[in-house]
Length: 87
Image 1 (cartoon, helix red, strand yellow):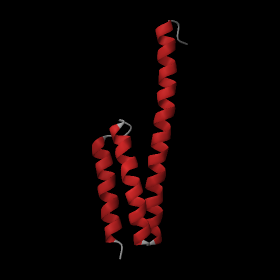
Image 2 (cartoon, helix red, strand yellow):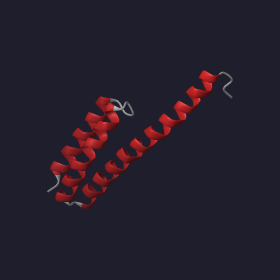
Image 3 (cartoon, rainbow, N blue to C red):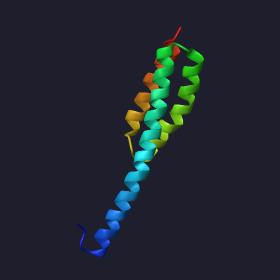
Image 4 (cartoon, helix red, strand yellow):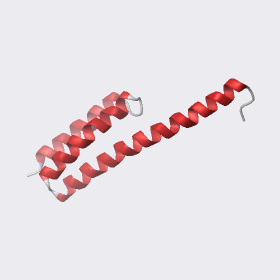
């Protein structure tokens, strides 16, 4: 357990940031799941709409440092290719 006041404050800050990061990561993963489900159903319009909603969530997670920006770009790129490949 933290002994000094600064260590106690650091522990509080870490707990607070962890909660914020967890919500952002959850929102990103939920939006990814919605795109995946739309692609699996074969509905191109729904997949496009889901991708349009997911892209800002993914990039927001990247800007906050929750995922690396290259990872975020790769996810968006692969999803957009899969959405456009739907017949």
